[in-house]
Length: 459
Length: 178
Image (cartoon, rainbow over all chains, first blue to last red; front, side):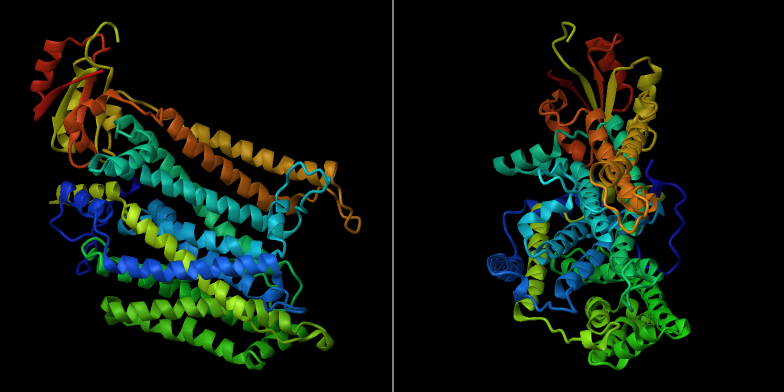
């Protein structure tokens, strides 16, 4: 039934396996579930959690200040009314896309190597979208009225404007979050049952029991379950493409030079997957080391992710090239000026760094030797994370700061609150991730059992 | 429980192939009220115990259609009937602008019906089920495979069924308390 079980192409000769040999159904179950069920929390967990929680406290402080005093604490002004908040929003939501790509698109494509990384990639999606969702709400100025974005029977008799991409965005992001949550939780149910059966304490047994909802692995249940899982994957695939498309419409539908461009939807989606894979590598590399999961998250996974990064990075590079070409080819003086200003204007150094981090450094991935060099992959992933943030900054801020009328030009820079909220959102992401790896299996146990079974059947 | 004092008889196997084989034989022997339990989906197992056709895809299709029509109508009703805003004389029913939200709501409702549909069809959440009374059954979520023939099956008789299960190569046979 699982799509992965049919037509398994033999792995190319010489490439590392998706799972190291020697595992049995029992050993794989025990290995993954013991990370959660152990009474001893590793020291690095406390250190990591404490650091990220400190940043969460900073975030709470900033949110309180933003509500109490107002969005004037951000650096936003006219003409740059969309500052860090929107940059961070687009950056975070893009990061989420790789999780859905791994869990849904690779499932449909029958890629077996997804099975040991899909769970935490999906968790990463959820947490990244949660961080992303925070920013537009804070940026509203009066966050307590955020529900006005939804159509509800309002006593004021007013309704949202459905012709606006900003309203589409509300629907796209909230649907994306909901569907990612359902997909993730559906995948977790059999593993929660495993934890329920393996937990020794009363409280964990009870809590995992409640969450597993009485799952007992019946053949009929599995049959429906796999059908639903496959359908959810099929639904999530067009959804993930639509989300960043809608996000790009926020810009592309406006008339601002540097925003009003038809290449935005595909180029945003490619950028989203690019940054997402960079973030997965950033998380996976330390995790597999710290928890000794090198036999489950193998060099094959790192290599494949590096290749996806290189491919999507090239699409992004093509996007930059086309933007530049079209600015020249359009003959429009505003477009031409925008591009000159982007490269050589007051923020030109940012564009330079963007090209360096996002395009030049990742070209190192062409060297096959680097695919097995873990520190180098980690460094490149960090570089892409920074590069993609700079890209969003260049698109949002640099396009806005000089549009048509020189009299309306201005210079923007983030305030300390802008930086604090960005750091706080990183802390929130880390904090959620640390809680997740402590209380839930970060690798899908039942899918790994399937993989072990297939390996054994193959001999 | 038809006057039976047990829920059924459960046999334990150590491989999916053994379970699949036993399930096929049990079906051939005329048993219908039975279920197989495995730690991961086993291809063909549901069919082997006589399960055909899942209604999940139909539910998802219905959910998708409801989301699509409902989503479009929501926007139509808001933009044309309830709160029309005249933007330079452009048509109120500017349907191309309503497509993104219609699309998102189609996906949302289809996904919700896939998730809640599978829970509903599977009868989850289920706080109590007799199979958990078998102590070894906790391995059904680790590395063991089980076949349970239920006492409500017309062919069930405690001794004959046990003898049948012994011929399937089961590694253990347990009575399941109701």
